[in-house]
Length: 263
Image (tube, rainbow, N blue to C red; front, side):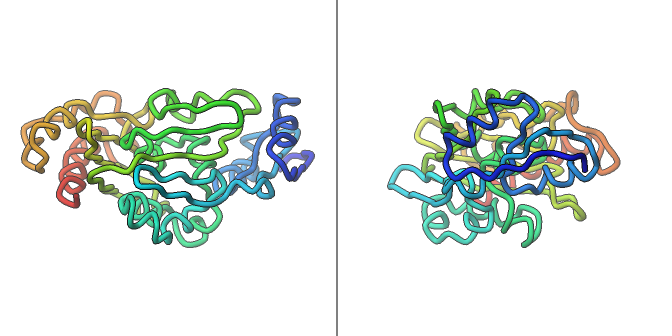
């Protein structure tokens, strides 16, 4: 690691001030991505601002929504009986992230702010049409994700909570890398009052995205066979040592059918 200054503020205003005062300052949430990056010297922050004392934890469930504090861990979401009752697919998704150590350190806000192209939460937020609340505004899922590792967050802007509408039905199907447990392809399907939304993670070079052809077909007939004749193009999909673009295109169809069946 390189030398840096370490700060641990106890309120959001102080954290925002520290992050906004220095373009090279970085926020530390659960650290499951950030710490390895520091160890590999891929990032050289001047200041690391630890968010653990800001009190941004907790889950609030109403008949129509689930709101989760940004510093709430994946493990807490996975184990929450309220989340399991309101949006069981969200609890299931959280339980598939990494291993026990990762789930009990990693946070929902950190995952969304990082926007790793293979992360799970972006698929849930986009499929459910959720919102991200920061210290200064509310951002819809469609506006929040802007490409691989890129979001609408501005310098010094902090996620404080994330809200998900309660769907009629939803499910998440994930084809995991056996070592890292990241999604080689993850599909979140949500049946809402306005129709069906399908979000794909782990497959595209541009990060999480919606599969509009699947959405249109499933909105007419919510059954696995509704998409059997739709072929997903491999153009723009990831191709690496784990899977080719063509294989990921195939997996998108397979995992979508599994998610619909799980609903």
